[in-house]
Length: 171
Length: 171
DNA sequence: GACCTAAATGTTATAACATAACATTTGTTC
DNA sequence: GAACAAATGTTATGTTATAACATTTAGGTC
Ligand SMILES: [Zn+2]
Ligand SMILES: [Zn+2]
Ligand SMILES: [Zn+2]
Ligand SMILES: [Zn+2]
Image (cartoon, rainbow over all chains, first blue to last red; front, side):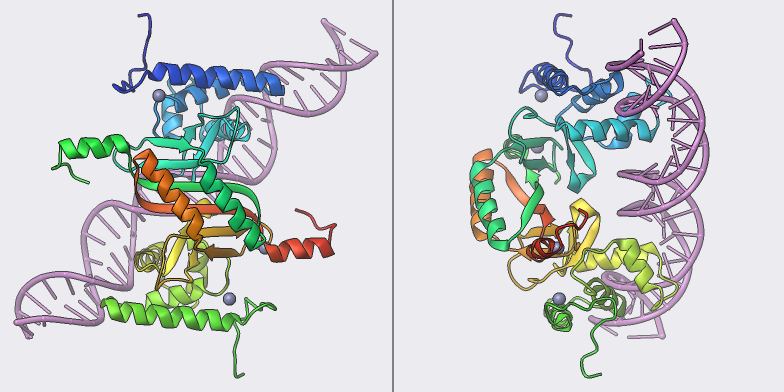
């Protein structure tokens, strides 16, 4: 009972409760600093997003949220998502129409998303050199960037290693 | 009458009919080489996409297509788009749920899309150095990429220059 | 506490984007 | 021209997202 990991997510490879705790603590701290309200709904939605490292769809969140608040509507979720994104606590995964908790809310925010087709997990990285080259390229093009989205679909390291062990797995 | 530029698009900065002619000729040639059918529908849809350098939505294409073929349905358009994307003649702009004609169908295909918020035009670039650094990063992460999407939203060079001349313009 | 205001949430409806499933037609091969 | 695959037609529905307006809540002023 000491460490109640979430039923939907039982990773063998890391302590996910730690991820959740970090994310929520950071969110609370940042919102307090900024004088914005991390209301009950917003907090709950953020917690639901962090149930796993998979990108989650808005309507999937709605389904997860209804047991908590049965009157919830799509608007409820989208408004919470809008807030969380504005605060940089959540990213939208454009190529999936889905959302993912941000691991680096309190610092850098130009990220690379690695999206695994097999396990659906999304890894966020801040690839300094790529971003430097990208800045050069944009300068050359005379383009002033407001937002950047780099999304790579493929197979993550863990899934590749599993595929070696179980080669007859379907794609 | 010699050069009938399209009514919806009258660029002062380049000969767009040339863009259209190139794109269609390349498409015809590639499809012939590959033994796939660039049918009337597919050809017409590709032509409609190339009406401008703006990303176009599927239902907008449907509206443009109905005068040509009044029985067209969403499926008609989405099937044509699926084919054109499979052949690399069109890209999906993930962050807009929209589509854009590809300028480099016959060679490289890992592109960077620069999407202007003001004029809505999309510029496609193949930024070698960025992609090289990205490959390093992916190798380091142990990630095997299947598809890559780099989409930057901001203000293009031409719009920036106009903004200098007309500084009171709204965002 | 009464009052005001802005922010957040509730509620209803609908817009916008995309696919499933199955029937029919067209093109190709033998 | 029979057989098969590819393309298209047709109907219906699934999925994602927002608009518009009413009500409630939180915080500041008197
Ligand atoms: Zn975790
Ligand atoms: Zn994986
Ligand atoms: Zn052009
Ligand atoms: Zn522009």
